[in-house]
Amino acid sequence: MRDFHSPNILWRAEASGTDRVGVLDFQDALIGHPAYDVASLAQDARAPLTQADELRLKARYIAGRCAGDANFDPQVFETAYAVFAAQRATKVLGAFTRLAVAEGKPGYQRHRERLKALLRRTLSHPVLSPLRVWYEPHI
Image (cartoon, rainbow, N blue to C red):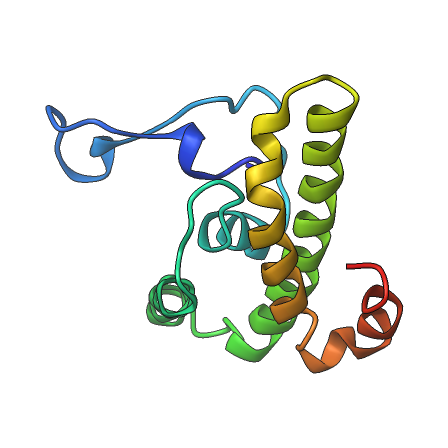
């Protein structure tokens, strides 16, 4: 979907099963790597989730995929997750900075330090070590 995060998810108590989850703002949805949406949800830009929460969300997704697809490779997914989480955190940091500074919406500033922390943590993945070298003096 490319925009899967808490403000775009609704709980529909009156429904049942998977219909209880409603999704908003999907008009620009694109088919892409599933790791992007998992990273968007597990590293939500606005909702503070603990690292343990993030790990539980990823583990549940991976377990479900493994159960339903014998060809699913958790290591390939973890690498893609790190790449997409870093890309998304960078994109959101830029968007929130623009909204706060250029558009006069300072409320977005409150999310910046958490996003920077998520980005630092994500950059610890070995596949991102060359990128981490560049990022370290900038975040």
